[in-house]
Amino acid sequence: MNIYVLLKKTFDTEEAISVSGGRIDESGAEFIINPYDEYAVEEAIQQRDQHGGTVTVVTIGDEDSEKQLRTALAMGADEAVLINTSEDLDEGDQFTTAKILEAFFEGKEVDLILAGNVAIDEASGQVGPRLAERLNMPFITTIVKLDIEDEMAKIEKDVEGDLEKIEVSMPVLVTCQQGLNEPRYTSLPGIMKAKKKPLEQLELDDLDLDEDEVEAKTATISIFLPPKKQAGRILVGETGEQVKELVSLLSSEAKVI
Amino acid sequence: MSEKILVIGELQQGVLRKVSYETIAAAKQLNANAEILALVLGDGDLQQPAEEMIHYGADRVVTVSHANLSNYTSEGYGQVIMEVMQDEKPSGMIMGHTSVGKDVTPKIASRLELGLISDAVAIEKEDDQVLFTRPIYSGKAFEKKVMKGEGLLFATIRPNNISALEPDASRTGDITAKEVDVKDLRTIVKEVIRKKTEGVDLSEAKIVIAGGRGVKSAEGFNALYELADLLGGAVGASRGACDADYCDYSLQIGQTGKVVTPDLYIAVGISGAIQHMAGMSNSKVIVAINSDEEANIFKMADYGIVGDLFEVLPLFIEELKLQGALVS
Image (cartoon, rainbow over all chains, first blue to last red; front, side):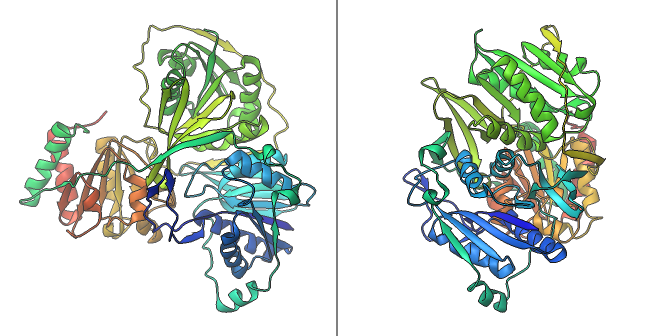
């Protein structure tokens, strides 16, 4: 099977966010593989181990994105592709990303594409479905189980807590939800091997794309932080009294019950 | 009424989701003078949900009923929505940012080469331009986005953030049933397993009771469920509680997991890791119950009780029963 994983680097979840000059301040921040994309990498490796084939990890980013690709290679992916847009694009949106990926996949034999169901930074969840539509491929989002048998994928999809059992023809694009698997940690031999695995670098030119063709359909005009919460009130007294006071505050002061 | 805005009435087991009403209010914020056209799709008699959409402010409703719409598939819903868009040529379209909305809107946007602004929590107009506010980094920050050019104003809205209009049962409007041949589906839903305990959906709940590692066991969550039932709320959890198998991952709130914005969030035995706080910090009122007075969650809480949750929760439940302070 030709298995592809769409990967994005994101801020480490530990990072606090600050804004400077109308943008998210990225200086000094730690980047990681988007946590949902880690499930995608893990699932791709498990499917390859079961059915044979190759796992190719694809990201759109800048030269620093090599780090996350090497991590995916160290986990066990076979090849990586970095589509470096830092020279060509100032900003893009989900249309941009899907368009670039569409060009990348043109003419490729694909059996399965995996992605995270959402990136924890911009959190639109659009790119997977957008790409599948461009490739005229069915897609299933937020999957928690994947079994492939005879050109059919049997999938369990999380629907806000309920579970749907779905059958879909291959090739298919799926986006991964927590609970699908436990992503493995990288091992030292894995990291050593990853250094020698192929990592292809592409730019828009290599995909025969102009900047105009991928121009974003939406624009961000400002970024701001939520208002700081004022320090709350710690109730005092006997537990019973505290509870009485809490109920009264919630009904008369906060008016939420 | 030259312009019209399309909103989607989303059914869940035959009943409209609350966010469907909110899409009507959102559509009016896009353009107060536009005709609000609602599409209600499913399998069966859709007259009642269609009328409800009108009571909540829709001017006209198109219903599409088909056996292949009994379960959501992106292909089935996508075909119907795009056909209605082609008929009606709306200038805007709003849908709830639900499991279904998240799934079908990017498909439509991609097919029609449109921009799409997902998960908006507020809509405002500034010099004829529509600004959509949406959380990024799980609510650690927000951005305001606009559509470039003249394209369709296309957005999904987060449940519980844009208030629905007051329903008016005397409102009337045209309801038309449209035939769409829903076919060529490559996706088959074989079975739906309902795992959710009660009717209140975590992402739409006005009140959320969330438990952490401090709850200590799956049984420990029973008190949270009792409290949630009493308040008409839903139960959520921290990652710690999910990792420890006290509850299902579908209840997880945080940077991975769900982001919730209820009116009241009660954090029980949750220390308040930054990843968890990202998922609930924009709740209107936050209550923390924790035995560790140094717990980070207290920095975020409007009201805090330092104490043993196994002592506090039964008293809390008892007091609510005494007060009869039930939320409808």
